[in-house]
Image 1 (tube, rainbow, N blue to C red):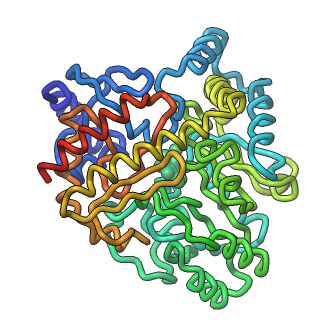
Image 2: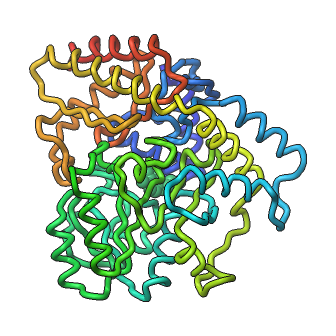
Length: 427
Ligand code: PLP
């Protein structure tokens, strides 16, 4: 079934560490060869062995309107023909900035970078500069990119968190990082008490998408907001996954809580490499050349990427029904999967927020990466491979999120639910 992918993987291993780009290495967790893509359109991926797959990985999140989305394709082709990198600004950058600022609540200015990682790093640097403090609180199981400049054990979820981290302990390269458990407000409060006037920012995935789509408990984000207000700490929402996905205004809009700095990636680039970070004037004007914090990049604001992102945001901004449709489709899929799996003896948990969903085989909901680590990964492995054989491609770890796109039809969803039923019989 995957003969050519296996050959290509063997070839790649000679020249690329691990044979593939790092998110795809997650396949190691389920065993088997990462599939090599040939093309993609709408809800489907076509691999090098000629299989058509219904895609729930969604390039790890960006393609919310489906693959090869026509307005993005056209914008990119048009832009590419008239030059892609100038060393001077283009109007495109201002246009996407204006649109993003109008879609996201309470931000005045936005700066573009090349990835979600860079967006989070830049947000952290800005917070440190603005507050004159060094320490950062992050949550175990939340992922903010591959750079560990400020993180303890950068990595997503149970599988890649190799060593046990003690909450509140600083260690290694991340000596200024304080680690807390997601949804544990009193622990954050204790950390603040023990590090008075030293904490620059709390960074959080407002929905813990890298831990199996764990939602914030009621009052948690509001509680963080209050702790930040009371202690001169900046709240950073890492909306790389949730931004422009959960709503036009992302998690801030969905939960009605405002962050001080917001980091974006994935959807904002329409599938091209774009990250961004945004805040109110007071904070953003701390960036050079107005303020002292230097931040720049050779390809940041690259017109090709800006053209793709602008076409994507315009499509999301112009059709107010998209988020409603995504919600309905994902709720339909969730109901279908629940119904199917309920017929069997094994325990399962489904987490869902908007068009993000995860399915794993534990009775207890995952609350942090430690509980995820205890999960029934053997059953998940079988589930993953069973679905792949049916032509359904899900994230290769139980503690990663599936992304629903507007390109998925109800027929695709029904097919998926039936495939899950078939596979469940074998688990
Ligand atoms: N933050 C979150 C919440 C993410 O999910 C990711 C990537 O998966 C990142 C940051 C890093 O973004 P990138 O992979 O574009 O560097």
